Amino acid sequence: MNPHVDLKEFQQQHGELITNHMVETIDSLAMPPTLKGAMIYSLQAGGKRIRPILLLATIKAFNKDPLLGLNTASALEMIHTYSLIHDDLPAMDDDDLRRGKPTNHKIFGEAMAILAGDGLLTFSFQLIAEDNDLTSDMKIRLIGLLAKCAGPQGMVGGQVADIEGENKQLSVTELEGIHEHKTGKLLIFSVLAGGIVSEASEEELELLEKFAYHIGLAFQIQDDILDIEGSEEMIGKPVGSDESKLKSTYPSLLTMAGAKEKLHYHLNEALASLKQMPIDTRLLTEIAQLIVARNH
Amino acid sequence: MNPHVDLKEFQQQHGELITNHMVETIDSLAMPPTLKGAMIYSLQAGGKRIRPILLLATIKAFNKDPLLGLNTASALEMIHTYSLIHDDLPAMDDDDLRRGKPTNHKIFGEAMAILAGDGLLTFSFQLIAEDNDLTSDMKIRLIGLLAKCAGPQGMVGGQVADIEGENKQLSVTELEGIHEHKTGKLLIFSVLAGGIVSEASEEELELLEKFAYHIGLAFQIQDDILDIEGSEEMIGKPVGSDESKLKSTYPSLLTMAGAKEKLHYHLNEALASLKQMPIDTRLLTEIAQLIVARNH
Image (tube, rainbow over all chains, first blue to last red; front, side, top):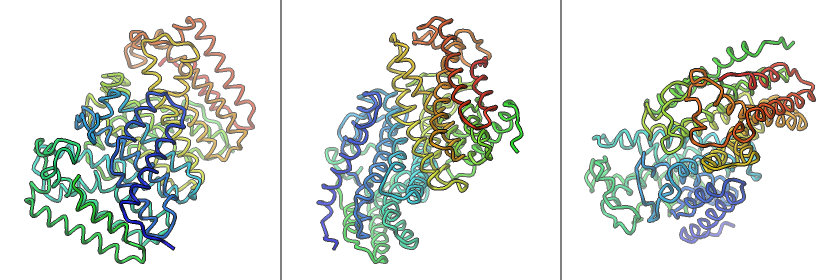
């Protein structure tokens, strides 16, 4: 009934589907060609599509059709993409490269990059609102949650806290608070949205949130570890770029061994939450393990 | 049953209500204090609140309680406010003053201004999604329409077209297309949202859209006229600031007399649409007339 595919196959198949869906949807809209080009450039600039894959994998875990979440997953990836475009701006991180390619404002200029980001953010809500496969109640729940996870109470707030935490010695609790908001909330949305679309119970949604909370922190710890141990070629940005700005990181606060221990603690907590649900946990388990094992 | 108040009274009463509602709502959210301060600064920086007043006045025209639209009107004004914050950035219009006060980035810095704008835009959809007075069907319609009017097919697209039209001789049709998107679509949303909340018929929604389309163009023509004829004190920005950038304007394309003739044409078309509906058109008529008569 629910034949298992491995993560690599699932990711390849659905990653391409999400990219195509995002690009075709934006391409079908009437707007100035430069704006369209700038939006599509960043949507096509690669990336692991972790958030939308997590969303679709959650739906599959509930034995439903992952494509039920295609628009929501695309909206989520558009929001992630807008946040990268704005983060890279000279006034923010001032990055010239992202995933080994010139950043949006390096190609299209700052004004267009700001507007391409604004356009992706705004359109993401339209994409969910116009989804014909979901009920209005589901869509309102998804939109409300997405805005909360991406907005001032979530990602945008985390970004501000991150900027304000630069060049400052942070405690582990402060660092965790930043990551919980800056990257964690969108990962929580990924998994909860999959649950909402699958009509998961409130109890299951709580377990899903716990799962996502822990893989979110694991993801960020691994990011910090890779920033020191990875190679520039693998991670697509200069190695040690965080360290050079005197940023607080898990290895700098906990030592490398302490960071790795914490990484495995969160992985185990995430897997423990999964096991409490009567769902097919194979894909989600693989995703959690990949986060820890990835080298870029 | 529907005692008439004049526009000035309605505007004073509800303008203050909208400002308070926006500020109190943002103030109640957990987020970094700097971000909260930056968001609230621009929400409190004045402005005529034309869009939310238009929304509430439309509801009143249908003899319903204007407060049914309070959250939607606040969301709309937050989107208008975010667009001003981003427009004022050095990479865009590079304005130091807005409504006679320092622009957001002059006070909080560019990074915070970008994020305050992102935060307001994102939260606006959450505010509608979490509105307990409206049905899910209404909220989905409002959110889909708001995103369409504010995003790449609407305001953001118009902003790009406006930037690309600078220092270029435009035709009246091109100029109209820019305004229709950059400022017109949000005005159309204002009136349509009032209609949606009031459960207007599809035929009434069409007439409301026609009304808003014409007052939107009238508004922009009057803006161009004021930029030449107004006084700096009244309009809160340097007079002739559009002209000094060699921007195409209605007076420059049509002569001042031609621009004024076009202004009255659109006013008359707007009023003609109103008269075709069995609603109390008094407030909406006053708003349309005020747009033409205003001196700032």
